Length: 140
Image (cartoon, rainbow, N blue to C red):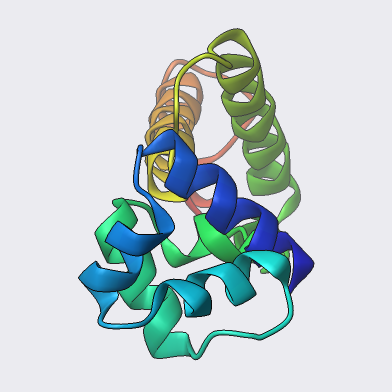
């Protein structure tokens, strides 16, 4: 849970919240937040969710767990795999170009899903215009 400790401190400081203020918001002591940030204790799932809510981020932002690898590991067909790779690459480029902005995991997921849906639509148009992909391949 070292990643959680690091992310908690980083996000809390970015939001301008003191340990005392955050602890008050979640009904815990400031020492509890200190121990979480030091990595000496692990939070419950409920506490992770409550902290995320107060900080205005996702639980994944705190834990470092990304939803994107789970999407990619769902064994997509070759066309979807190619589309997913293109979308992930485009999302990474966008995030790299905008490092000064704060994105939550939900923001990134929305960017990826918008790109994925656009790529599916483009593949369907390509097929209708005589391209090599079929609607079944592009939408599977």
